Length: 491
View (cartoon, rainbow, N blue to C red):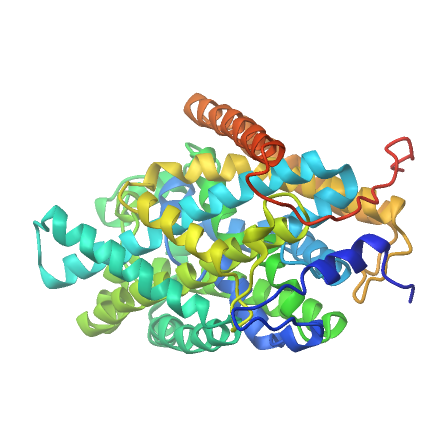
């Protein structure tokens, strides 16, 4: 094992900021509170949180292709991404997470851009969870009209309460994730155990067109499995539910024994994602008579009522609400840690590197809460494709950074290292890269316009930060850049 680079040492030093009691934390090991199971559950709720909103995949492609996609695609997308996250998070245990990887590989400007975009998308995406929770509560209570001032009060209070839980520390969030995992996944497990004896395998083998033409109609169901498949919705739904493993990287500085914990936690998280999606689809399709158009968001509640009774459908609706709270908590944590990590790296004013007495971000969490609360007043259902497009671009950058760091920084200590040399790592990433380009090509013009607009916003924001620095409005942490020259060959 080699010693940490100068850059790593300075990051660790700069992160030893004063807490609210005026005490300086010098021992980074005191922050390590996440073991295998808590990290696996945090990752699971970052990536998926359960088989929620995967129903449109069946409507887009039919049962067989949808189920096959959730089994096959993770081998090309999820596993490489999880392995890269494990290696680089153990090598760069910083709150800035994947921003540190990109910054080390390509320099401060590209790392800063990646950080801004990741944070903006994170807080906007996080806002939808409290909105979804409200919608489920209103439906369950039979409320058709909810006054705007009540809605505003709800959004402000819920965001504040959930953010306070984050303020109390990652150990609290990890324990909550464990409790929520048991509560939210139990009804799906029960639905599977009851429905497995009612599965009709013929239903699982139908194409999209064959599902529309029910056997009870007496019409032909001989259309091909690839006929009339809606590829863009299918890939977007699958991508949304089996990716984002790298977004758990801001917790890397809080992981106990990284070389042992990261690979095992990633394995458990990948397995949970695959099993939750595939087993739920198999029993919901195989144990119920459904039309292609039935498969909208929320159909699992209907399927559970058919399989086990109305009580099971209500339980799943409750589980969806609880899971959304857990996903909010996890994403709020990673967003605030990401902002704090960018400050520790000297990318943004060092005020955002301040830690509370619970060792959590203080001002970063406040900013994230305010932005998320404001964003929660809007609807984000149509933002799925836009968020996916941005994430594709970010993931391509991270894949490239991973290969570059393998070549330019081979002596950096890696407590966990993927057991492949650089050439085979490139080969491992080829299928994932092709799929990313396909998803980018399938995006709409609206998504492209939003993407370009946000990039322009990031450029203006960066200029504002530097203008404030020149005017002495704020100070930055001094961190040396140790990026290897780009003239070095990548292969």
